[in-house]
Length: 336
Image (cartoon, rainbow, N blue to C red; front, top):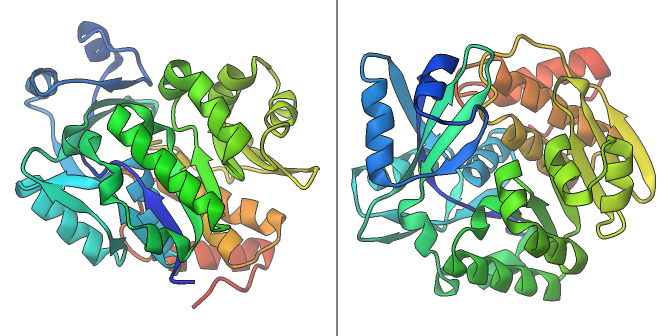
């Protein structure tokens, strides 16, 4: 296979800023929410934080996951659309430096961006202008590359425009015809609330592996307890993963339920925790780890990311993860 994981996602530049709950209240933003906004709204939010330091990074949920798979030693690829602007130039450069195979398409316009407001308790509130992301079309797909991948990974964030929906559905149909494993992240409660019926259709007809957290699972299933959520989702999908924050995660695979402990760390910034979990999980699956090992690697990847500022570990991520796993659970076979 050419790629372990081929991702279709929104390439976004992240602008990360520390904030206070009082500022969120002043801006009338619900804490922990994901909001689609226009350029003027983004400018207003930035003006309200003009005297607060910030940093920018390559972002987007699926891109974060593809970068971390590459950092772990996997072969990942990313399809999305960016603008012919300075942010787009920077994005492409950072992606190439991360050794992710780029299938990014470019068109005159603005590269998408997200203002991520980090509260004192490490919760993150996102305000996204999709820019060129929303103009991804089925003509941008490289179907041969998808066919040559072990896993196709898509996220619920791809469901906000008719063009994105058509593109993702075309990719899913092609992957299914060619025996490529299909993985979906439900991404955010905001996405599930808007697209529950569409997501259920994807689970019933295309998806082999679904990632979600407790809130997303509750919205999808109308069940309160994670095990009940797991059983309900497994009526549609053979492989279900529900993350439960510092309580760990729970997996159902081949009718077996596996509980994974969270690695306890001091949370500084929860941005990218779910992306990191998915990266560890997908990478480990492609390396034929058993499910307990898959879950453990996913858990430590998430723990490493929440213990730093920003959505990813920038240096020696693979070495950090490998050392921890070898020392704690005697997992020796993280690829060199």
